[in-house]
Image (cartoon, one colour):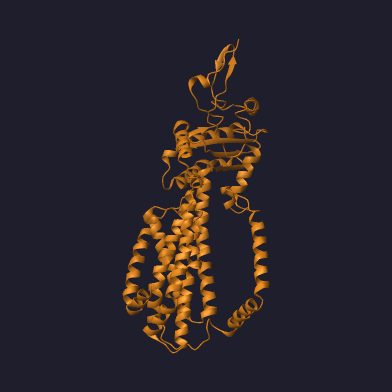
Length: 467
């Protein structure tokens, strides 16, 4: 460790050029980075359960439904029904849609003059409002229609859309969501409420939310880092060096994720901010030790050697323990947590490599002025730290008891944590998607489905004869 730090300080420009080349390579890979939100990532890696799930999907297809929600007081006006039918034709032309179920397709089994008919309820558009209303009341007698395709009061109609899981590929959600938006846009001139809600729109919304969050969280994390280091270290160069290492670490890990095909999801999206905060600890240790050497009158390579001798082992142990802690998360059987643990461990490793090379190189190049300031920038912080340590040393038993009590309270509070895997909770309460989900739940039967699969041999599934 000491040799690496000293070598980086001896050849600073070579270090900067090599790190720059690697960074350019990572930037080239960034366009391949995927943002992917899937429910399958929450599944436990149970081979038997996964095999059963895959077999069910191949046999019956996916039961994940996207609901096109249509609401209006005059829903069954012939002109409105004609507009809905036209939109449905457009929807069914979308290549990714495998099946569409609505009153225009579901069979209406009936007998007329001794003949059996099974045409769809809305095979033809009724010519009068009264006929259409009568047809709606008849449809509500079918339990497969009520609160599934038509609300109990007849003011909401649903078109349930199903997709073939085999068609899922990069960009699927955005393509489907955009195509559905375009297909139902003309209906907004006829009906009060028109929208679609399902996996494509939810996943697209989460992807957009992740992108928006990164534009806010990363600058805030960097700003907090810069302001904090500026207040403590009181040197512009000492403040900018951790900013450089953090930025390079984020670019490198995103490039690695793009290369390995690891997508950005609700877990891995927090890794960049985590690297900025957690990864800056080694920088602070090294820079503060370098400033200590400066205050003792040691400059240049000797100051870097002083820093390496006193902090090399400490930063190595800090990195190893932190990295192993996150790497242990990758042993989890849930894909999302596996990816999070692996990506974070790789990111911390890259951050450590950048830190032990870039920090001594930058200190050698850009810090030649005499540093006469007090450690960590000022007497206020020193007084606060000294007072805290004095209290701990003077009252060790009281401090220990207080810590144990707080740990006990924390354990109690931890037991109150509830497990919640509802993806809609990722959005704010004021967001449009949760409101739409509640609307479908109130008027219809919601967007969640539960499939019960019964399997057995022919004898076990045969009805018992009745005499």
